[in-house]
Each structure stands twice: as C-alpha cells, then as structure tokens.
Image (cartoon, rainbow, N blue to C red; front, side):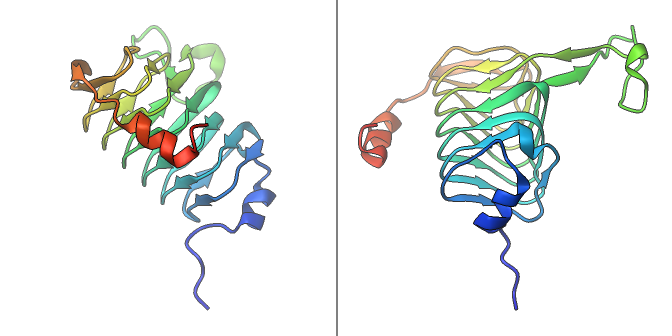
Length: 188
C-alpha cells in the first residue's frame, strides 16, 4: 500500500490546529511545531520540507512551496488570501540581535540575548519568488510581487514589483488578477 504524500483530513484535525479550513493539503514531510498557534484557511497547499513555528495565520488560496521556513515566534506571521511563497523562502518575525551587544542563538539563556520580535504580514495577492528572505516587522502591501533572492527588510507600498538586496520597487504590478479572483470566488 502506497502512503499518500499529504496528511488526511482526519490526521490534520488530530494536529490540533487553531483553525483548519476546507481542502487543505499539508505534506507529510512538513514540520509543524506549534499547531495550536496555527490557523489554516481553505484551499491551502503546503509542500515538502517546510517548517512552521509560532503564531501563524494562513488565509485561503495560499501556497507555501517546498523548503520554506516560517519562524513566527509570538509576534506572528500572516499570509493573507491568494498570497504565496516559492521554494526556499524564509520569513522571520523574530531574530537575534546581530550587533554584538548580546549573545546569540537559542542555546544561550535569554538573560544574555536580545531579540527583535515584530509581525510579518503578506497582504492579499503578495507573492515571493524563490529564495526570498523577510525580516521582522515587514508588511508587504497588497498585490506586491518580489523577485527571486530578494531581501525584504522594510514594509512596501501596494501593487509593486520589487527585487534586490535589499528589495526595491521596480515598477507597478498589474491588477488584472482582481477580476480573476472575482470569477473564482463569485465576487465575494
């Protein structure tokens, strides 16, 4: 008997997610460390070797591709409806202080460390190309797209195409997809 590469609906319910929508597919190789802090909308696909850890809210019609890492901590990461992560994207809502003013890494007691914690939000229709990194406190405006390997270290204005290290706005992004969304959802 061949094992399904995705958890069954029953198995997903047994995880104890904060919320679980309809038609959710999560790869069996995905690591979910805090299911009680994670909400998954409907029509969600989470591919192989992804890590989910901390307060995470995933909207509907969201794809998280393989080898993505979401380190939300208590600050939280939100992926709004129709957003998506290409492979190997890493989102940090929490990070050590790299200035040298404190010690770093989780093996060191918190009394000797200093962390930055701030929410990360991908608004509706935001998409990240492969290998993007997002730092704490970033809010990506509705409809933004980010080229592969971009470092997103500050919040962005809506409906832009961004790329680079750090990511910079290159041009406006088309909004044709809004009409397609209406057709898919019946205008809801």
